[in-house]
Amino acid sequence: MALPSLSTPTPHQSGTRAPLSAADEERRIALVGMKRLALGLLLAMAVIFAVSFALEERYPWLEYVRAAAEGGMVGAIADWFAVTALFRYPLGLRIPHTNIIANRKDEIGASLGEFVESNFLSDAVVRGKLESIGISRRLGAWLSQPGNAGRLTDEISHAGTGLLDLLSDDDIKDLLEGVAREHLLEPQWGPSLGRLGEHLVAAGRHHAAVDLLLEKAQSWLETHPEAFGQSVSTRLPRWLPGFVGEMVDDRAYREVLVFVSTVQGTPEHPLREAIDHYLAELMDDLQHDAPMIERVEMLKLELVDNAKLREFAGEAWESLKESLVVALADPESALRTGITSTVLDVGARLAGDEHLGTRIDRWLADAAGYVLQKYRHEIAGVITETVERWDPAETTEKIELQVGKDLQFIRINGTVVGSLAGLLIFSLAQGAAALFAL
Image: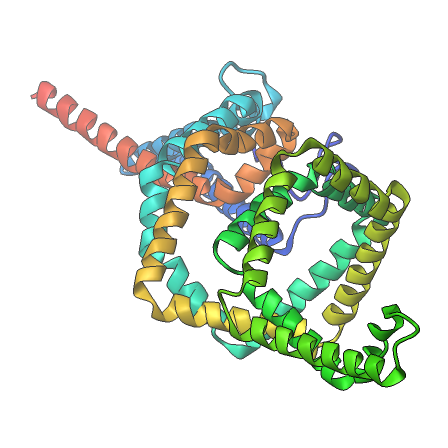
């Protein structure tokens, strides 16, 4: 009548089960010990019953002992049957409503998933837990420690390096080329440049560029007077004396210097107004004049053809990738130093800014609530699906290892309670018989 020991696997289990963990092995030993104790009490009751039954005619008081032992055996056997029926067929007999866990494994998994979904994955429970633990404050305190910030930076660097290794260079080049083509080449340049230039001209932002050009022109003229020499005299009649040509060249040079200086110092100079008017017309033509727009498009195609664009995308990615790999590998690089500094700053703000922490905690709670609202059934379904994939015998063993030790107390209590009940019933019967005899 003893229960099969978990230490001896069945043929179905043999060779197919993974070895028990250290914790499960301890549970197995404790379970076997409790089973032996419960069985020992049953055997003790059987011995007491046999002895008292054999000697009760000689010693009438042993009738009470026999009744107690008989009740103890009944209680022990009944509770053994009840506990055993949860995990297997008692004595191998396929009695209805036994081997419950193995036979109803899938229903148990579904009920467990439903229980978790209803009681643990509700919005109120998760939101309350998130708000009570103060995630932002704890995270901020952890991140504000230099050692933790350094560890996080190392992990980010390793992850970044691994990600760069996984990325396909050809795919990235195709992506860059596609983005450049879609956002740089396909749109017409003329209207965009015209609208941008129109705003700049209307705001007077081009005046600084005009001033710079005038300043550079004056500086160049003052530094290279010889370049201006004879630029006018060579166009004079040959019969004029040479000194006249020199005077004309010198006079023209000085007039140009005065003109440039005057334009520089006079915001309302006619040349500036002419430039403003020309730029305004140019910006309007870029937006609305079809021939001008077409000329800009032709210039665009000449500047950036397909081969050059592909080459540019490749060079840009290779340069960027190489720089990132080197920076991520160097603990002293500006990139890693910047990451560490950012982590420390974020940690300090999370730990010290209560308003920011409250906002983040609320955002996390809202995000968790949204996820649970949309996917809590799928999350709980993981439990149901996992239990469904378990082998019935393995499921039985897992559950018995977790609760089997405590269930053996049912057998022990059944033995004790059965003994007391048997003694009480026999005593009441004897008392009633004595009363009727009177």
